Image (cartoon, rainbow, N blue to C red; front, side, top):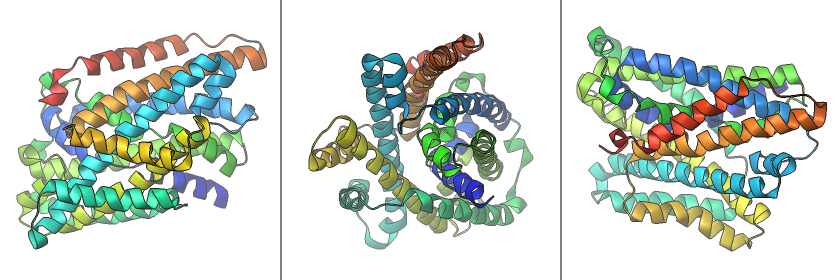
Length: 373
């Protein structure tokens, strides 16, 4: 039971991340009911894709992530393509953490010291890049502390916000924004890179592995919906892209600084974790020198930020729908080949509609101007 709880803690702590801050704002556009429906569907489909990789990982005796399994079962070309997809997804996620982390840093320190957002974002980046360079280990496990902190802050928000809650804020729907939640919710629920690590933590036990994955994704989804409920219920149309500013404005409370601190801590630990992961990909998979791997991993998202890509919701939506959608499709076909090679049987027919779903989601987000309004 201890190993199961440790695995669940690491998985949930890693899945819950920067996406939660943007979801209330998206809900203010489309409506809470639509977010619940989206979350329900994507939780189920995300669990299925994670289950597929779990089966492959459990019965394949190599230590790898999606690019490694792609090369093992689909060939070197697919392995390289998967490596590009995974690296691009991580760069997109790092960019999202940099955008919002720098904003939280600014919102907290600007009232005391002044200065523009660029300065605080560069400070945020410098601290993170330094720790990634030093190779600080064990950061991912501190994510569980962030989850517990989030629960406490959520309870505090509920206690402060309930007197200001207006149910009419939750019963809205705007079909104009129908495509908006897809990529952001998918981004917020994704934990595929952690499946091989969880497998080792539960010692390849199929039932425990599946229980960790399903419980972790469901818990993350419930956390997100609870957060959306209280923020949107109180803030309504004043809901801000960072969640906390609009909430504090609506209740006239000084709770915002606490939210900003939590936002900085949450984004910062994840920025380091993902930065280390990307650095290892460049170092071990592409065989680049240590310092070169660090430089590309850290400065790629910074360059995109300096080039003006600062639309947080657009970044997480496109990263979720395009890069994570592609990763889901790759996993589906890895699973197909895995069944054919290991068990000499055909994959179930339903994997093809599943792959088509992610393909349609990918295309719809690419051509959705709503993301950049």
